[in-house]
Image (cartoon, rainbow, N blue to C red; front, side, top):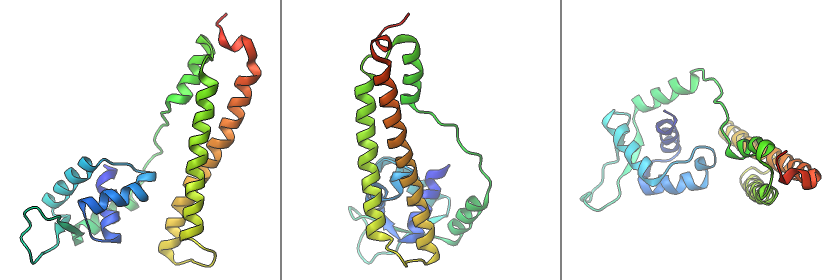
Length: 185
């Protein structure tokens, strides 16, 4: 149920068309809650039908023109209700961790290279997050909205830092296993 709330959040920050929302998801919200173009448009239709958002009035005919949406009071109330509600953490599902577990019984052939690839991907994501932090959250910038947005970004930075450090350790472990790691006994 979180995609509708992600869309409500984005629209409260700035009324947007579906295309603009898709682009904003690609640049920000999508780092922690991804959605396809089709999912966003489908949710916009549902949110509009539920009376939580509306298409902004336009002076030109809407045929073939992108509609911009804004959040109605009912949408703001729903988002506030959802924000205040308690939620349990979701169990983690990660194929890489499962593959490591499987490697314990079938061997590690090919795994070290993929761990190195994962490490590089996480390192790139970490650098992207750090660049966003340097650009968007300079020292001394501290309004409530910015502090909360920065907190979300810090979660991404901390997670990517964890993954790069953990993958360094995992690569070292796999490399240290030597020949015995490639075969089952």
